[in-house]
Amino acid sequence: MTEVPTITTTTKGLQPGLTRRQISMMGLGGAIGAGLFVGSGQAIGIAGPAVIISYLVAGTLVVLVMAMLAEMVAANPSSGAFSSYAQKAMGRSVGSAVGWLYWIQLVVVIAAEATGAAGIVAHRFPGLPDWVWVLVFVVALTAVNLLGVRNYGRFEFWFATIKVAAIIAFLVVGVLAIVGLIPGTPAAGVGNLVEHGGFAPTGITGIAGALLIVVFAFGGTEVVAIAAAESDDPARNIRRIVREVMVRILVFYVGSIFVIVAVLPWNDAAVLAGPFSAVLDTLRIPGVGLVMDLIVIVALLSAMNANIYGASRMIFSLSERGLAPFVLMRTSERGVPRFAVLASVAFGFVTVILNWIWPEQVLPALLNVVGSTLLVMWAATALAQMILRRRADAAGTALPMRMWGFPWLSGAALVLLAGIIVLAMFNEGARTQLLLTLGLTLALLLVARLTRGLSRPGVVRREDARADDAGARTTEE
Image (cartoon, rainbow, N blue to C red; front, side):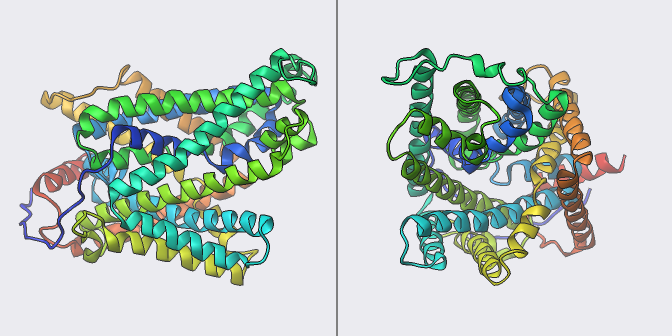
């Protein structure tokens, strides 16, 4: 093994500032977005009421992945999260590819969220062009992320609280509608679950097709693994954070979808257009259109805020490990990686500008390339956990938190992921996304391999270097 010398850098490093409650709400905020409020209608249109099964399968997979992440975070908190763990388990090239892939995905999504939120605001409040609103959102959320992690945590907490409150209100109204306690509206009951072609009108094919859409709706929960590194006690906090996030997300997602398919026929055209608005319109709740637009705007800005945070911390970690430019690991007196934040926002903003120049080509093409990134992240997480857990067990290392059912449940997660990938290969749109994402992943692996000798000596800590060497040997074997 090659000994890696250490040098002193000008960075003070990240500083703890997030509370357990804030991180928990960040996880909810990252996962509860426009994909639930708007995109769930498409999944319902494919599978009918049986889309509930699709959500349960996807939710089970997310629970397993988050449990694996929690085990690794408790043992070794890192702002690089799954990228750091992939590096320790499988070597430098894999860790680099996973980290850069995640960063590229987030900066593209930041552009998409800014564009989407600006479009809705400009439609509701005409007078200013879209680009002005995009500039306002980018500047405002960049400022939030530069103020320090403590202020960022407070801001994102209230962002997420608004979304959670909206879903809870929707669930309460939906249950009242089902049992007939809404004045002037007959009880909806649960007949719509079976009266329009049965519970699974499109069969197993529809359930599988919806799964391809549903699984990506849970993206964003991984930010808790990144944020835990900036809490006061990551090892103790992560167990409760993951449990809280996963229980709430499953209740909110599955509960909301149940209300929708119970109150309205699954094949109602209004459900496809906007399922939440369709339910509230049926109950004759005034101002529903404006309310839903405001909620979607908050959802987009909350997700955008979380993605700026996640992207900046990931590229900061890559720089710490000698896998990104040195300047990106510099931090302010408040422990904010300023250059990492600005780099993440700048790339996203350039993407927005290109999207206005070529509106039909640039952003859709970029989103297509990173469309299946989540599958790569989850697969890397599952593989890293299995390797690191076996390595720890062989060495007799005590872990602060151990995932239950190992290795069977870890293997089950990989089987579910493999099944989703196989399903994607039989769907033209999903197949294109998957192949483009895999192509980008291979390109990043190649770049990491070719630049292996260019890493800055001393930036990678000795313990990380040892783990990297072990990971590389494991991969070669």
